[in-house]
Image (cartoon, rainbow, N blue to C red; front, side, top):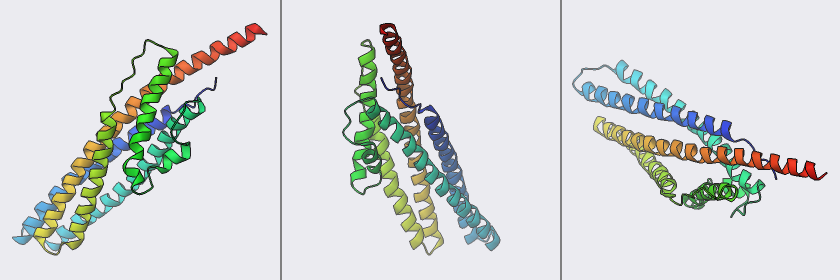
Length: 231
């Protein structure tokens, strides 16, 4: 029996980076609300041009940090996902895709609307089934609704964020900038929801991976003892 690769460290880093994203989202919401207040106050001469420039710089810097954190999250998540999917292949489970094909499913346009859900369901269900093969007392949880919800919310957030960006680029009045800020705030709220679901998903699958790893190690040791006794 082949021992599976430990994926716990990757899952830990993935959860941490998602937590950082959630913190940045909350900071962005507060900053955008404050920026809208400054824009409203600017119209009645409550704030100066310097105040506007300062808040603009703060929003810009946070946006750069947010973008870099998002890229880091993608890298860590994909590395975690790849090992989780590949472990099942290495254990001889009949998977629908190769390890590379499952990963590319996140990046190919239109295909990435469906394939990530399908491959994540595979990991969740087939990991449980493999554990059940070792321990028949385990009940396989067939409810994968949380996986579908996670990806749907993630896709929706992409559309909302794109709309907010276009609205900001077209803004040429204070009211238009405030409306664009409101769109960004709405996008951040959706992102918070998506991040929460992603953390829940990673934690849930990671617990199954840990159980499988412990079971696989125990069974391999039993096999080794059996082989030794025969010799």
